[in-house]
Length: 278
Ligand SMILES: NC(=O)c1ccc[n+]([C@@H]2O[C@H](COP(=O)([O-])OP(=O)(O)OC[C@H]3O[C@@H](n4cnc5c(N)ncnc54)[C@H](OP(=O)(O)O)[C@@H]3O)[C@@H](O)[C@H]2O)c1
Image (cartoon, protein in one colour):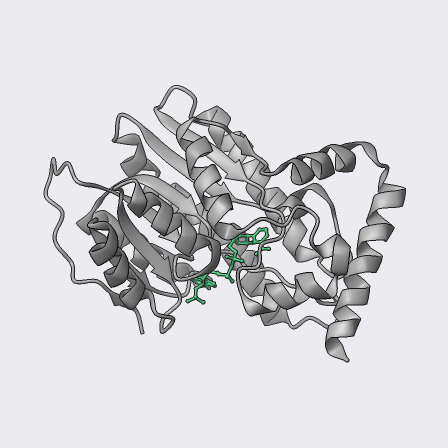
């Protein structure tokens, strides 16, 4: 069931503005929300139902003295996206959009369930695209507005046993670059951040630990990634890669031939995947 904060009908010409953050209940999304609240920015937080979003929103409201409203919904469903956007547009003025919700994971393509594949594509690609599309007129109505899309270092390399995830994050990169060109001169600044590994939840943490030294290359805390990304977003930096190791990896990925880098990284992921199944 969809649950939202009490609606307060938006008044025409209202000057209170909000940042909408998807996947805000935990991990990087929660850190984005906290970072924005620290800067006195009001929040609209979106995540799946029953994962503590109302309590987190209340905590942020009390701790940082900002306005905070939430909407619990499953963004893999197309009608839920429109419902969420309608809720946001009918109640609030929005000048910041952080498209953070996304899912990853490793699976052999052939044995992955159709629902798993469809959910990843729907959340990582469709939800991000449609939310941006439906909020664009509202963002444009402000003198200055910001969009921050969350991709991954995985957007720079295709990986076996992770076939859909890097491909979905390439979409995020190309979509952001194209949109940023299209919106030049409108007052909307569009950025994409490419986090490396972050220990955001137990599933990702176990995966990083199982991969040993290679899993930790470019490892940063979600707090750091959120803080730096928000700084750079406000400065209008379109491509955000954080930490010198991630920047070095990015350069290496551009120079090392596919025939070397693709089998190497695929072997690592395969080893980690099979170790997790034993
Ligand atoms: N962690 C990493 O190592 C890493 C590396 C590079 C990029 N990234 C990217 O960073 C972003 C955040 O990752 P994370 O590790 O912080 O993720 P996370 O800990 O799994 O948190 C995901 C967030 O998205 C929400 N969410 C998941 N499925 C949803 C759905 N169908 N509808 C609505 N909300 C949904 C979750 O809500 P609930 O709490 O209610 O489930 C949660 O708030 C993702 O785009 C990910 O691809 C992560």
